[in-house]
Length: 68
Image (cartoon, rainbow, N blue to C red; front, side, top):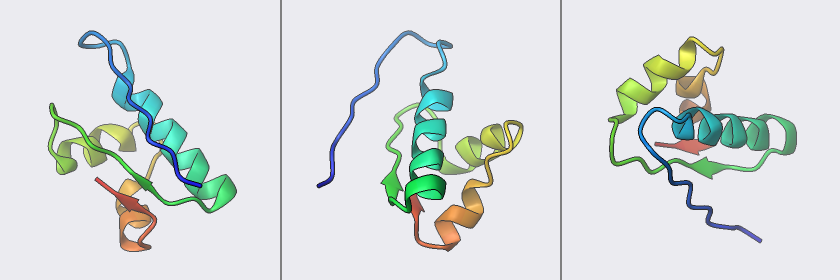
């Protein structure tokens, strides 16, 4: 059923943006919950950074669909 995906790469290559887009689409299009684990940014930084791309992560967290 569920899968774990590890995304790695050099700093500034878009890993977090790709991961959030992947998770966001899974939640919105397929009603699949998701978890983001990051070692570089705290959850508030991720939420704030992704707002500029139109991803309202706080709403998804409040709905119980996403954990950062």
